[in-house]
Length: 505
Image (cartoon, rainbow, N blue to C red; front, side, top):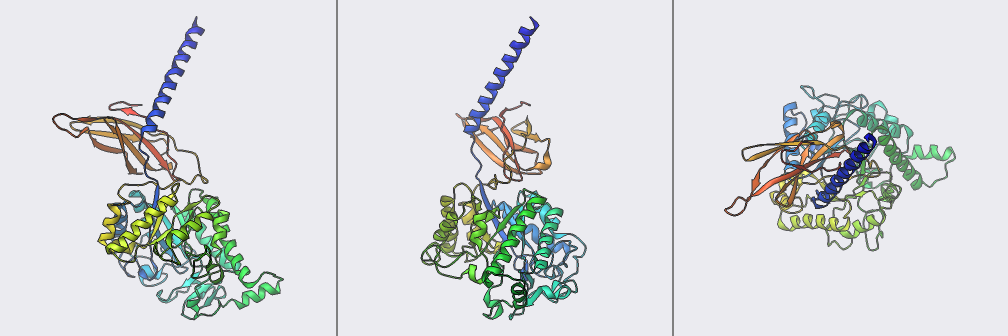
């Protein structure tokens, strides 16, 4: 008799669980899907382009300027900032490998006063606003023209055998030297290990542009002679490209070995080679910068690829959609392809329309992983019409960064939620057994038969919403249901459970 009762109870429990699962599945199908789109702005520190506004500001002044920029991105529904922290083999953070940056304090090697770690500050402030923080590094530039006097700890003075001087006065590390690759790789590994960053980013500076050296070839004759003497058989161009390729592949592996969820992004010059695709003209980065960006994309040695497509839609020989379409055809590993866009063209109606059109075109061409990187945040600071065009247009609603399924497919656990009502407001609260794994929350709530949602930051644990909407003489749509999901560092969303008002799980 006891066995029959136990069996009957088990069957009833299974039936209830099945009904709940079916109900959740039906509700999930009704839920609005939060927009998935990467929205980032570059924040340049070299020559104090974007931050800090000048060298030598106080700690308080630097922090205030940083907060203004992050608050601006938050207000425009951006979800990522790309901060340059190594503009010239220096550091805008505490480093035992390279000296403090001149662009911070006006003297290379001098720490901020009173002391603080700028990168730690930026990471915390960005995350508190629901923004990812990607660190942008220049792997080879050793000294910029605006970089003040080199300190004794600068690679220019401490390891002069690794650098060459260009005719415009800059110093550049020789990418072919193993010691250069080892040093830059160690810098990346150190940052990834010690800071809670979301991405590592490099741009278009590999071998320098010819104009930096007066049109002359890169002065690496000593390294080239040593390579040939050791029996090297590659052409000089292939040898240089091999050096860069080796570094790119190595950096990707070392980042993943330390923290798999940290994304690696590259933003190369927008053209691979003239004629690819047909009709395209311009700089040959393959032959001039020795950057085989197509290979890196083909091989999947990165998580997002952001070619600098700084030209307009109707530029006949450098068209934004034409180049974007070609790069997409080379995206054989299905990585994120988030184009770099130039928002510094100006703030008049024509240029605002150009930016909005490029965003909409890229959404249509890349529907499974939308996104864009904007050069630079200065355009957002200066141009009110651009800000209005974005927030009234494509960036009107908040967005979650697209998931990187090749890094992690496992969704986080579902939050536990509850609600309580006081007068005309309902407070939705939630908790999670593994908070450290959560980067954002999505709170879904239902008025009548319609669901809506809000994206919340990692620090939030409650949301107050109105108990009813559209109060008229004949209508009063009440808040009837809600649910909360968790988003992890790789963009995965947890399962959803529907609660009725006042219910606890």
